[in-house]
Amino acid sequence: MNPLYRFLIPFMWLAWVIYWLVASYSAKRTDRREPLGSRLLHLLPLTVAGCMLGADRLPGSFLNERLFPRLPAVLWAGALLTAIGLLFAVWARLQLGRNWSASVTIKQDHELIVTGPYALVRHPIYTGLLMAIIGSAMARGEWRGLLAVLIAWAALWRKLRIEERWMADHFGQRYDGYRRRVPALVPTRGWARR
Image 1 (cartoon, one colour):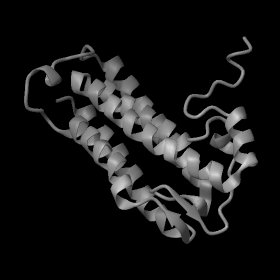
Image 2 (cartoon, rainbow, N blue to C red; image 1 turned 180 degrees about the vertical axis):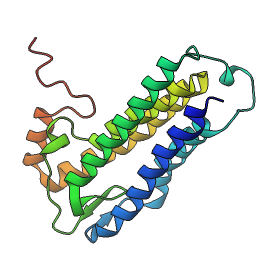
Image 3 (spheres, rainbow, N blue to C red; image 1 turned 180 degrees about the horizontal axis):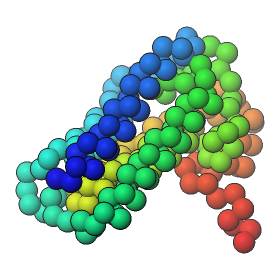
């Protein structure tokens, strides 16, 4: 395995996880929390996707076959995309401040954040995570990366849909207006007008 994938990408993910855990201690108290069973329906697939990308080899030959050529440019592009995605997620986490939670929740005195990355997409943490997972899969360069991306996307899309309902219930017309103005995951502002 390439040293870039063996060390740099895991280091970036580890740094992100450590930051995420440390930052979680400053969150507001929770008024409403997603049930554990529902939470596991997106946590378990995300864990599977992470294991698929992190394991040296998976059982079965097809998933370990090359999807992208083993070229330095492909590895570095994947590492760069991973870094950009993780940093985008951190920016979103910083913008949320004490309103953040790992699970779908409504916090005490919950605020609707619509600035920073939240002016570009409604779920920038998920956008950043998907970018990082795509980058990691690209650097891995095997078919399992594509499968991991699809699994992660499905898990995050499920969680996003729950959050959308909760935010609409809690913020009403303010959230409906925000939802009409700002796309869910992929920034499109200005592109449609060109």
